[in-house]
Image (cartoon, rainbow, N blue to C red; front, top):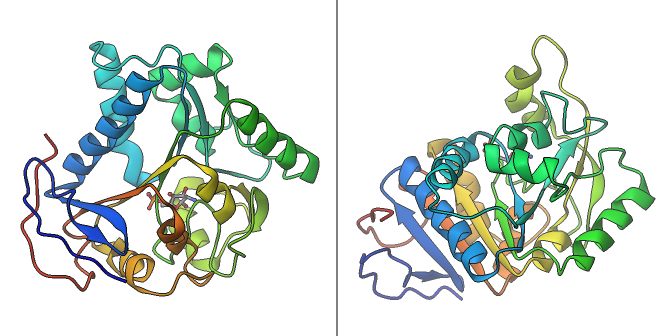
Length: 269
Ligand code: GLP
């Protein structure tokens, strides 16, 4: 059922409930990054050693710059938080430059967490025992308190591609041809790895809170399917509609495909 509440836009339009999920549409991708950073700050303020799982990719570049900036100014204290992430290319470790863990380690507070043993990379071996061990380890830390998510233009979440069972936890995955095409420049002149290791839809449901971030017109159709299509493995990102504490942060371009009344967009702070 779709429920639309009046949107006051002050300070955010968080009163908009859409398919039971809070949706905030902001004026720009930068405002979305700032808003995502506010979510992180709230969680670590409440629980300094919270386990936070990050998404990577272009959507989150400005977000990590925001974190580094605010941590440098002492506006956010990440000295005790624990960090992990969603997905990795098969066989790539944290020091491999094309990998997702390495992308995270470019952000100073995350690099510090890594050096202090507070960063837990996805086991890129893809071996069953390592995957189950990783899940058990996250669980032993109290589970993921805050899970950031991005969406692929084909509806994937993490590297859970269309067709992934919604019951899957961490697993080894084959990248879809459209995902390989998007990632070409990341690996050029080398080929994009064919396989990855990824959190599954069930891993996402296991997090206490999820924040899905999408920006740009290229994500509009995927966002439409995620929010207004069926909750099904054709669009793995639609799993967030089964989560009881989900927030979706969009810029107006990514929200353009949603079939809801026109409304103004808000500023991040
Ligand atoms: C990537 C990653 C995801 C990411 C998503 C969106 O390929 N597997 O973890 O959230 O697809 O990426 P981007 O932000 O670069 O569009």
